[in-house]
Length: 159
Length: 132
Image 1: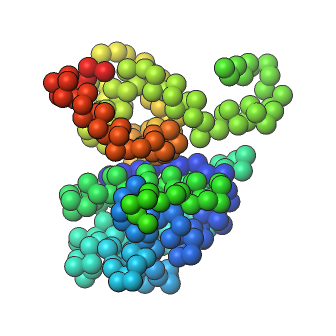
Image 2: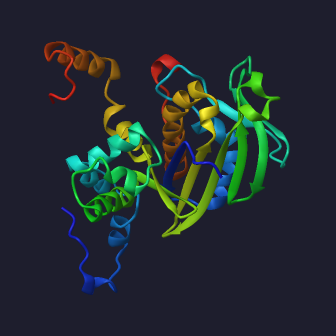
Image 3: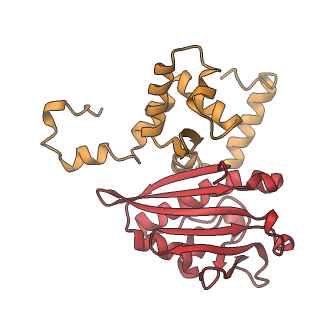
């Protein structure tokens, strides 16, 4: 294992199964995988989530623009999901893929600990910049959604 | 104000106490941030993420033990996440609790007006961010 570029941790009052569903089910994903402060539309990650399969990070709009692609490396529901992460133009070049691991652990008292580890991002410094502001938003949106059942409101400019 | 649980009261683990010991407790985040040394440690991790205790100590004018205690408080508040790599303990800045605070208390105000105020302050103070 290389030294991770980022490690993000959040504690959520929910079950591992619900977090897992939020990671692989586009109906849940599009409610939190958005930046409510930007004009960016919501995103969803589309795949059959089998090991070796492709996945695509798509905008939820008419064009379904694909912003990120990668492969599924590990799939152990409801504990661990490992995927690679790349620009669509680098889809065929594994050496340019970074790697994202989602670990879901029960923490007691009805809490789970979700850890997102992003490794090998130094392969793409520009991606590194975008990522460092993106993950905290996605994770705190996810926490709000799972704990309150509400997605965060979109800013007026985004609607 | 929250009273710290006393050692003799371990058996009387009420729901409120369990809640207060949860890692998502916002009190812990503010308490951890209310110290210039700990904010300095977060700044060091922001500059270079994933540092060992030894690397962090090089920038700190205090004992290794004191730095360890500050890091532990940051870890308890979930502002620092730890990853073991072999025998090395790497410390990562975890901004997720800060983002939650931002959403709760800042995002709901009008960002553009806050931005305008910040720009005005910057101009008046000669671009010096430290003069707060």
